[in-house]
Image (tube, rainbow, N blue to C red; front, side):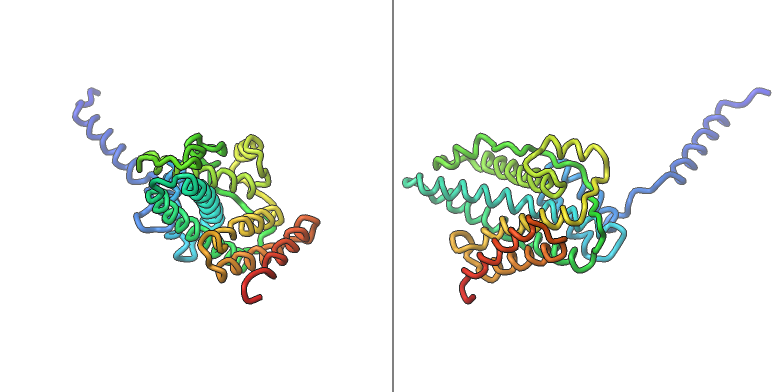
Length: 278
C-alpha cells in the first residue's frame, strides 16, 4: 500500500511534538532550581558576584537546593573576601608609593574593601547557619572546580608600585583576584590547601565529599584569616572583627579536638584579648 507523503510528514511532526511535550522541562524562572542552575553557569563564566546573588536567592527558602547552595556560597563568599582583601593590600601599597595622584587608587581601595567586608559577613552568616542546621559527618561540594588561577596576576605587582590602570584593566585585575581567592579557598575546603593540582584531581569525581572535621577546620582558618578585613588598619569595625573570631571558635567547637584545632583556638583567643573593651 502506498502511503501519501503528507501523511508521513504529519506523523513525524506529531511524534516530534509528543516527544517535546514529554521531555524534561527547564526550571521555571524564579524557582530555587532555576537560581541553582544560574549560579552554576555564572560560576563557570567567572561572574562571582552574580553567582553569589543567585545563591542568595536559593537560600531565601528551605528547598531541595538549600544545603548544597549554602556550602557553595561559603566557598564563593570566602574566596571573594580573600581575593578582595589581597587586592586591597596591593592598592594600599600603591598609594604609599604614588604621591603625585593617589586619588584614583584610594577610590578603588574603598570599593574593594567594602566588597571584602560584605563577602566576609556573608561567609560568617552561612557558617553560622551550617553549624546550627547541618550536623552531617560529611560535607558535599556539589560544584565544579572554579575557573581562574591561583597564580598571582602580573598586573598586581604593577599596582603595588603605584601605577594607575585604566578602569577596564582594573576591572580585569579585580575579577582575576576574586577568582584566585575562590581557587585558594576551594582547595582548602577540599582538604588540599596550597595544592591546586591535588584539588583538581579530587574534583574529577563529583560531588566531592570531605569530612566535617576537614571542612570546619578549613572554614575556621578562613574566618580567622579574613577577620583582618575588620581590623583598625582596614575597615576598623571591632564588633565585626569579634564576630568573625567568635564564628571561627564556634566552627572549631564542633570539630573533634586535635593539635591543629587547639593551636588555632589558642591563637584566636589571644587575638580576642587584644580587642578594645576586652
